[in-house]
Amino acid sequence: MKFKTELFDENAVNRALARISYEIIERSEDLGNAVLIGIRTRGVPIAEIIRDNVFKNAGVSLPLYALDISHYRDDDKREEVEVENSLKKEEVEGKDVILVDDVLFTGRTTRAAIDAVFAAGRASSIKLAVLVDRGHRELPIRADFVGKNVPSSMKEKIVVQLFKTDGKTGVSIYEKE
Image 1: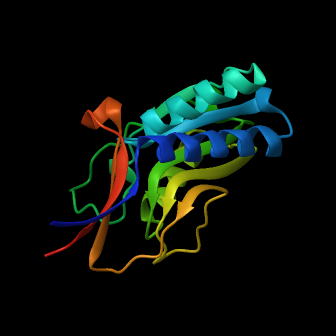
Image 2: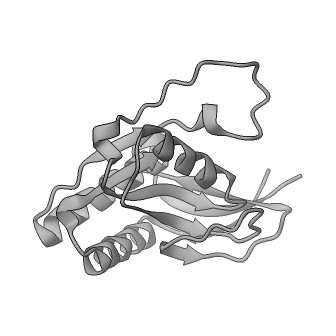
């Protein structure tokens, strides 16, 4: 891949996540019933930042769970495998779930995450928070909380880097070769 441009530096990522956090506070009827579920890999540290921002600004510590959706993907060609859901019924049953991911693209990762939530229990509601929405949806899925909408070409790749997983924070566009 060939570097094209930087969309967000660390300050811009932090501002976008602060804005998402405030929107979650403002739009939640009952923050005490909300849970954050970070989709591995980069959704988890993003959810941690959102959780910390919500606590700092609203005094509510949202429960946070990490979700591995690999067994729920429809593009995974594995043989029949027994699926072990990392979510437990009591973590989602009757809760206002906020799924957190880095980039929303086709919608397939989000669909898989929703399937995993349903497999664990019946959530009261499910909302989606993403740092970047790049369009090109294959499924009728939209984000409720978005850091930035980035119209992109199918020849481009959006790369999110977070200090916790990558040693630096930023969002860049690369040209696929």
